[in-house]
Amino acid sequence: MHKNWIAGQWTGSDNVQQNVNPSDLSDVVGEYVRASAADVDMALESAQAAWPAWSLSTPQQRFDALDMIGTELLARKNELGELLAREEGKTLPEGIGEVARAGQIFKFFAGEALRIEGDALASVRPGIQVEVSREPLGVVGIITPWNFPIAIPAWKIAPALAYGNCVVFKPADLVPGSAWALAEIISRSGLPAGVFNLVMGRGSVVGAAFIEDPRVEAITFTGSLPTGRQVLEQAAARQKKVQLELGGKNPLVVLDDADLEVALDCAIQGAFYSTGQRCTASSRIIVQRGIYDRFTSELTHRTQALRVGHALRSDTQIGPVSEASQLEQDLSYIEIGRQEGARLLCGGERLQRDTEGYYFSPAVFADVASSMRIAQEEIFGPVASVIPADDYEHALALANDTEFGLSSGICTRSLKHATHFKRSVQAGMVMVNVPTAGVDYHVPFGGRKGSSYGPREQGRYAREFFTIVKTAYTAA
Image 1 (cartoon, rainbow, N blue to C red):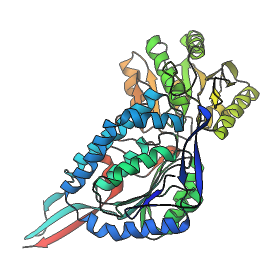
Image 2 (cartoon, rainbow, N blue to C red):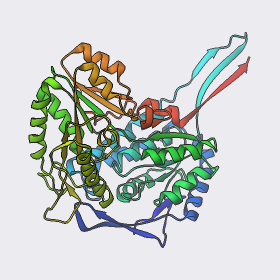
Image 3 (cartoon, rainbow, N blue to C red):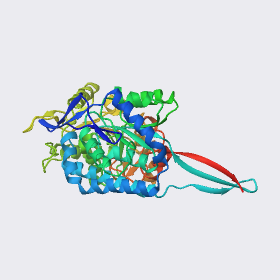
Image 4 (cartoon, rainbow, N blue to C red):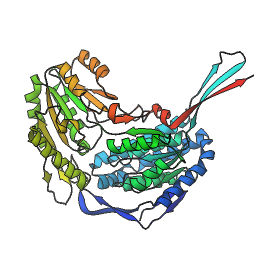
């Protein structure tokens, strides 16, 4: 049984959940405890007690701990990548790649711990010196989703620790295995007891405590839009600092002058890889009419050729959907699309394989109107809606016709249109001739409109959330 890590100890609970492999429902990945309200209270108490000393720790202490975590993640990427693939359903190469990314993130923020900057300025008044510095917030509650069960925790935990905060970490209930493995590595990194705590459990218990407990200074949350808005509303009433990443309905614009091979590759990778379970997935493919028929025909052919299967098989390109409820949601949107009048070109069916799992054939809808639900609501599965556009201006308007604004892309050979699109599309991230899904760890991640709230994640911009600015005046 895998326990929670609280106050420098592994602690148990009578409430245990099984972690089941979506590629093979007979394969139990492990048993993991669920935290009680008392467990969460103990974690918050230990974090609060550890914070005064940790907030004054040296940059070298922080560097050493984070660098050690990153080094072990990279050394064990194959082993942990297999664990990730078993519990979440990503293909093995995707799982290994995600663990490697987590290791790189920890190493990046190890370096950032050595580079916490401030400013020294002359005052407008004689004989006074002004210093502007950044200080840690205190106890940070971290809530992460199931679709990237080690990378997203890494890009929240690493900067929180690098800037001197203490952490209480709640992973998604669906994928405790990768989170526990990460916590086990962190437990051996030399951090003082209480600086990092793992509390696996339900949002109604752990998340609610983060919101209500005054010991939590800040909450960083990645998940659904309705839940995120609820977190924001309740936390704001208590004047907590909040950072939200809430999903996307990302457009990929394909103009008549696009390189067809490049455009198809962007569409396939963006819409279907990681089983389409990415907030940056290209779920709306907006194609100019001059290339529309040719593009949709070839996209359908290539989608049908994708190999859906067990996440650990070497020939699998698309793994299973993560869980039964997500599979039902994907299937329900196929029916919604049909009822709305979209044309289903391929896919959208539950598949049978050698092992019982949540297998689903990637789907392509054509002749989709921007007002349809399948073009407006986040399905979070391998379902692509292809929308026709009259010209570039129409395509841009369609791209912006959504309540989300996370990632966006355009495939074109026109420098004029690429430059205008980068400036005019209402999204936090813009891709030109590359898939909408796939980002670097050393630059900002985040969106606008309904996709994000608060400062950006990743890169040096992470300091905006995990620190607070202090201005000090000193007379000679």
